[in-house]
Length: 429
Image (tube, rainbow, N blue to C red; front, side, top):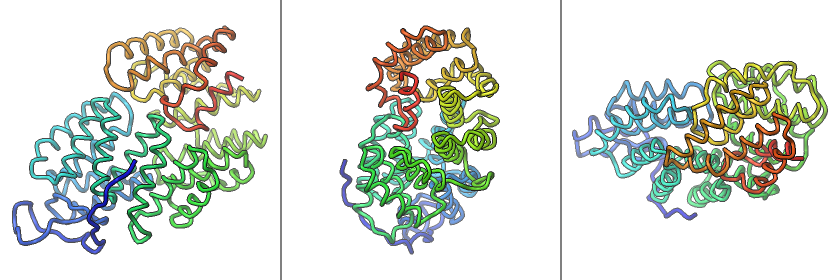
């Protein structure tokens, strides 16, 4: 993947503002901190969007409030509306589809006065809502070809590539941005963190470690870069180093979104590998276990760790119950195929076999009734994986082994990292 060369804009233009759009044509359009033009009607909206971008990159809980502030300052700001839609889409639940549709309608209504870059963001939001993830990624790539400093497009592209299992894109997209930037660019370290993760997922551990350590040194608040380094150590079985890297007082990162719990999940994995069961269980109970609201990443973290505990012969002591309750309440919430596989782990782990059979039926219906890419992956991968997991839960081990064996080299498009997908390989072993 190669992105074209874009006009470079200096960071000092970030605060320029020309009043309501269409007025005072003698002045330039306002620009954000990265020098990208914004169709914005107030300096407060620009300031809030600047803060929102870096909150997003640092996984901060304040992101939602930043977006609200931008929209309060300028309800017509197309990028603020797109950011709002993207924020809701990242919750990865069918429950948000209606709200995203409302935001999208507002953005489309106002897109006529927007820049070409902003209009492509509107198109990307529309495509994402329709479940056309490959096209959505292509639109973000087109944005990056003209505007390699658009770190919102880059981060969203990175996440979408991750959930589609496109490991080359995880590496190549941030590499292209780094190739057209220098260390003076605001957010340069965040791009390094993404590049490091892409290198790791493609097996280039030496280079990945070098880049991730540079990124963490540049910005210790970059949880993605820290998480990238944890992946590198996990893949090389450097468990003591990994546990030390992530050793923090409980409650650290309390100002971050649920991604912080995934970082804690990595620490729990290191402790499990080291045989420090009591410490690992404390990490699970205090940081990893599913929280109120049941964010999809919490489900993945908790189900995966509990399954690994059981495979290691550790008594999970009823911890499956709350997770199985959540899974049973969301049998028809199909957005991320990787999450669906973990819902099945939760149902089986909690002994909810009747609900697990109903979940199979729901997956079958979703695969047959939708033309989204998630539905296609569900029919091809999630459904047979879920059937194998159900067979395992019902003691039909030969059938489970056959199903898992057939899928052992096919799970890439399911999404998730090598480390996350490993739980399914462990079940086969």
